[in-house]
Length: 459
Image (cartoon, rainbow, N blue to C red):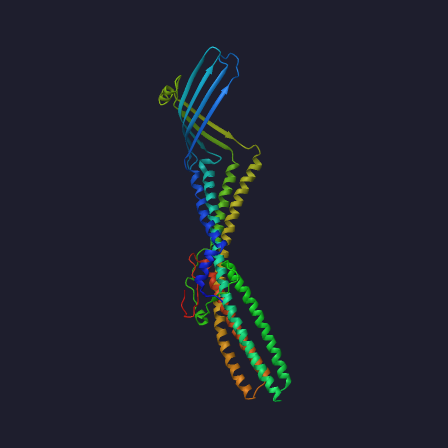
């Protein structure tokens, strides 16, 4: 056996050593950071383009047999939350025209503003905002799923700790049963050797002793499984740490705070985010299947000269502007299919919302059920103490009667079995209480782990 391992120390080991726990923490943080991708949708972007072109084809009536050009443009583009797509960039084009006898060069430079506004498909940015909602909701869903995995793992680890503590106590109970049965067997054997009791009593005592040994072996096997489970959560092999002995009187007083209200579970928050993502995806699908109608305006200041520097300086003049105003329209020809897709998208959004509302109702029902189970488990646990006390008193009295020859070995064995059953029931009922209290941590953002120490202090 190793050193005593308290519950807080054990849970700390799980958090440090368990790969699944650490992975869920990393995934939760990563999901929050990935959610920042939504900020990029409406953030400005820098773009640039560099192009060199050489054209040696000779068109009809052309004075030149070769054209060489270099084009550069750089600027910033941004989409607003309400659909306006804007670009501001500077364009520069330098072209050299060559013939057999001569060559000329001309440069164009233009600051350009382009504005485009969708008014039907993605009208006033509906699809873009929905895409933002999808990105945020999906990252939130991933983060809450990771948080739920983290909490469930800690709760299961805590339950494994209680199981090992309880099983070690049950093993001690079974050992006591074996010792008591051995004592009765030895007593009956001596009595039979002196012809003071029947051989049937010896055979009965022996059968009972073997039965108790079998019960002890079964309890030890379960204890071994509980130990392996505890070590698996903290990634430790071949260690057998001592766990704190449970103060059952303290368990009787457990009344977890905050049982009147609860916080929304992480898995329900994940379902809420999933519903929001489904609604936003449905909006995107609906928008994608609408006719497209875009209004656009382009305005450019133009400068041109045979020298590049002159063209650039002249580009800031408003003497030769270019203005373009236009309208772009397209519509799917299969209007029936397009209408069905939009209707289906709306139904899918409604279905997602209904599923989430049911999840909320199920959570409240689960909480009420958990509270009722805890209440009933505590009542049963308190009753086992009364039964155990009565069985112990009955057994001690009957053992004394046996020594005075006023009862039978069979009667003592029966009473002993009743007492061991009472001890077993008390420990099992107490474990159920601790199990349910641990499960309540699913409904708390800041779980309160209960540990019942030898001194009766709550940690």
